[in-house]
Picture 1 (cartoon, each protein chain N blue to C red):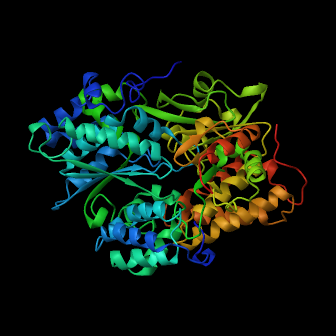
Picture 2: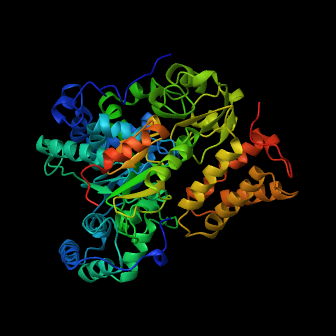
Amino acid sequence: MKETRILLAQAGEITPTSAKEYGAVGGYQGLKKALAAPDKIVDIIKASGLRGRGGAGFPAGLKLSFTANTPADQKYIVCNADEGEPGTNKDRVIMEKVPHRLIEGMAIAGVAVGADKGYIYLRAEYPYVAEILEKALADARENGFLGTDILGSGHNFHIELFIGAGAYVCGEETALLDSLEGKRGEPRFKPPYPGVAGLWGKPTVINNVETLANLPGIVANGPAWFRQTGTETCPGTKLFSLSGNIANPGVYEFPIGTSIRTIFQEAGGGCPGGKKLMAIQTGGASGNIIPASLLDTPMDIDCCAKAGATFGAGDLMFIDDDQCLLDILENLMEFFEEESCGKCTPCREGNTQLLYLVRKFKDGTAEDGDLELMLELGNTMTGGCLCGLGQASPNPILSAVRFFPELFKTKSTQKGRVS
Amino acid sequence: MAESVNDRCCCSATAEVLEQTAAIAAKGRDRPEMLIPILHQVQAIAGNSIDHQVAQVVAREMRLPLARIYGVETFYSFFSAKKRGKIIIRLCKSAPCHLKGTQGILEAFEKTLGIKAGETTADGKFTLETCECIGACDVSPAALIDGVVYGNLTPAKVSELVSSLGEGVKA
């Protein structure tokens, strides 16, 4: 089965920054429809069943409705382009290849909820993407798709590009908002949620790049069209970021519900060098590590959860049998220990201790009780941390204990190799 | 996160740099939300770092407490209170690159430059940093150097890369 390109249909076919070329292949039709009937947009998105593509899978229409239904003198649309999850680069591809799709999606969201100002929060690691976005934004303004009185409709919508400064935690929506306000990017206590009190306390729709990029197609073609692809509870396509020990790493678009095996073989080309697949880390650095025996798991939020995998932002990191899983777990925990913002205790202290315990297993110095301690700590963090970073960071360890219990021997010399 | 304030070295900003810093920071007076864009601009003219004197000027011109400047500059990995080289090599050490042999690339950079990760060469040309995912997992192992991604690195490619980067850069 080949890729199904909907979001990336025009990728490589048009000059990415040109609004006219994007318009010539059906672009900005969704925005025109939205401007003609702004009140219907939220219901159209709700009916489409679109779920957030940043990792949480929250219904996008419902999110829009929170902001649409909150009266305020000022509302904002914020695009989360801070994709810092190791192994994820799909938003980069959207912004590089079809930036107008994102711009159109943000404008549609603005018209739908009554916001006239939007921000794209782009991670500092993508300076070359910033150049493309600036050009595309300028071209959209010049052609009347952005700015004051867009397409003569009386609606205004402005977008400003904001460059982050290197902090994984800013991918968490409220940390991102604090960063946009010029502060340290530390997550806020919730509620209130950004939908009612976000940027500078104003109602704010904050969505991932890919989520927003889905809006133009849905509004232009209708919810029924969107539901033709993907699954009942998770319609549409998804961009999957393939990395690790795979012949063709990269970003590929498939209908949600496509099996990991299909993506692995058809797009990824399998493991290179005749190596055997040992495990897959699903959903990014904070996602579950599953064994190769679960290769037939469909990539869909519910199926992943049932099988013990993570859908997340659609990352698949393939690990061949030459690798040591405990070494990878150590690398992952070093990442979380480094990136914890330190605001809440379970995350700040927990990641440090999880790293310490994983190293004991890797070095073969783990003692009786260390495994139980690690599981107890991991579960405490899952339930007790302030934001998704600390809630999800124990996932690789907890899933590895479940699927690869033989690795966690105490006072054992066994290294990470299984199979 | 980024290094602590204690790591800062003695101040070395020239009067000219401080003057330029003041002009940039003045644009953000009473606009605290401008702090991050302003620190990016200031750092670019102040030798890839924001030292004590520079931070004081930013605080004064933006009319923000100095602690706010420190808080922000030490939180984000792209800002540094420590003096850095003209070219910053950011080598990705996140899992996808790690799987593809970052360690060997790091050793090759350390050997070629004669410094360890986190250090700056004596001539002030290069700073070698390891960083987390730069979103170039399709060409891992990869490094981000002056805004450009260098992918599919091998230890053998490193010394050639370093000499081509160093060409035309004054020590």
